Image (cartoon, rainbow, N blue to C red; front, top):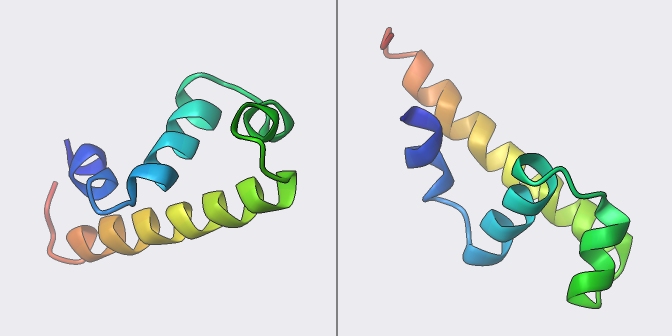
Length: 66
């Protein structure tokens, strides 16, 4: 549940990228071709999304929430 809450903090675009790459196991290249953007753009946005998730999940963890 915490992950779903944290994912709501993402932009719809970054949410879509994470879903494609991590849930549907697509390669960055495959997603880039589907969206007609560069692999570097996919990588940059994935890194950004993961940073947001880490920050959100880290904040929750610091409150001794299990």
